[in-house]
Length: 297
Image 1 (tube, rainbow, N blue to C red):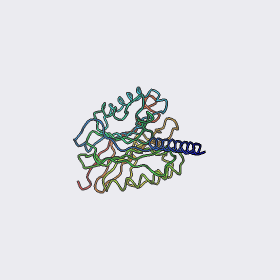
Image 2: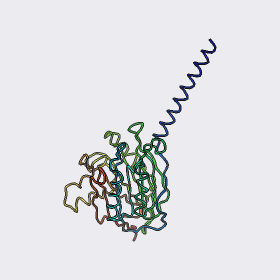
Image 3: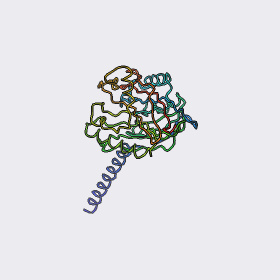
Image 4: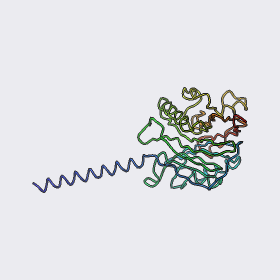
């Protein structure tokens, strides 16, 4: 009787250990990572007249369709206008492409910082997240998960770092909001605005990425007045009622570059547009050429 009782205890302990190991595995897989630097070491300042781009690279988990070819197409497209700053979403690490953001940084001779949002390459051979690449040094990088979370395995981040320009420092944010429900997306937008206003410390900022909300949604309409939508400039220049869509799946404009005024610095938009196509991603990239000036100049 004692032996049977001991066997049951051992079995219970074994089940508890297995459940604990499974829980630890799930938590490790579903936990965002810390920012990691990569790319070419840069110490120079970028010009006050600069080009900014944002692009959702489309990881296409678990198929990774044409991922290497699409990455090469992205590099070719980006080479055509040589951005000074590049924000990436769905920058993945897969069995096909070891580190998409690092590959672009190497090809463009940029430095970069990346933070994992979902997955874990060491555990399941896949992860994806946000990245910021620059033609100058990036300092003070950090990342924060936007709230509320849309699901246990879905994490949406904002990753940011400061870059020095000839007109002073600029804080650059790359982000990717949920596509699961308008209310959750709107709440994450509020979380993002609060984060940007807190972390930029009065400096001018760039907030770029895949917002999964078009310009007709309340959360886009309610953005602060000092957040300027660069895509609207492109639409006016092309004499369009609304700028071109960026999602090739939905036909909606959900990718943006917002230029946030600083306490003593102003943005001027010189030109803007989209780039890419189906050969590159399921999103069009967005680019803008701007001039940053100190207000008292």
